[in-house]
Image (tube, rainbow, N blue to C red; front, side, top):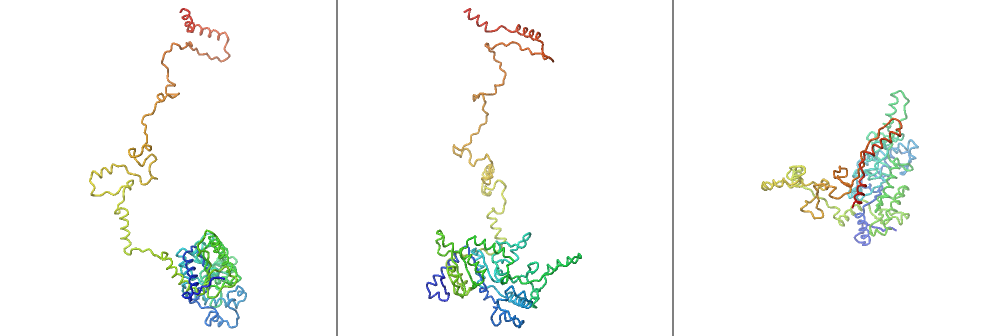
Length: 497
């Protein structure tokens, strides 16, 4: 069974007080809160209910006394089968739309907006069609700001949707033929009050364009309120399913259910899916926080038995009272969350000029390359200024230094970081290399032991094969002219000795 909290008996019920503090602490510390709301959060906004003596249902019955329609049948898709029930539906919706236009957001709507402002709201899901959340600043799934332009006109921008409207928006109309989505204006309401449906302007424009070129006209559809009735698919069902899947994957840590009796099947499934993910925070051993992973149900009527083990806290109060008390408790527990940064009030231009003068040195721009040198002081002597100008300009940042530059000079740096600069190239002969500059030079030294190979006589080229006789004669002449061999002289000298 969920823990019951009665706001009227907090002063005399210590356990209820502790439970209320635990819920308020969970709201203050959670970072991914999912809020699910129903019609109960709009009861204090001035919208009349359906079943009171001066409710909308009785006003419609006075206009159609012979029609027997239950309150639930006014939101059933089967009413379009009968022209009379269809006219009754249009009249009812027009009166409901005018009452919603004069309504104002409740403290519960502002509480949800506060969660979004503090960066704690993951997403808001609502069954309501009044669009009061958007008046507080929460962009709805049916609003113009979240609609994508270009190729994906039917798509919506998921990140910009802060409030998912599960049952549509009464402030818009939709064509029953071409599904064109338009803003509901005064001309549409006047037609609805008469029990009639206005024609779709887009269908009419296409049909007139075909008639202008002598083509067969097209069928013109009618407009209806862009709300989702029972047993009717949502036109943005795929987008809403993608948003829900994305939020489940982001692991919300708190679920707040307000102002709903949890009777609609699809809505119940959505709540159970979120509750299962929220409770997963309590199962992990690395999440010791007692406030994490809680499901809070705020409603005057108790939840059914099927919600045992799913809902952790049941707050027996109207949503406005609980929202205001929770915000007050939050401010007491964590006052730092509500601190506002103070700014100076005055002439914006003059204050900006003062900041600029302090930051940039009286508004004078420094020369490029000298930004790390302080501005010149008129009290400094002239020789000091000249010495400062002669210094090399330091780089603006380490990433802008030249490749060969060093942060310290050779005198200031350590011996291991000093740069060795060589001015003269080392000669190969001095280093004793095998191949030096003298390898290909002409040798002028005279060696007595050198052999005399005689004079080299080039061979004459002939067209054909050289004759053997001429070759022998040339060889004989070459041998006769050759100098005597030094080997014989050396041998004679040795013998003589």
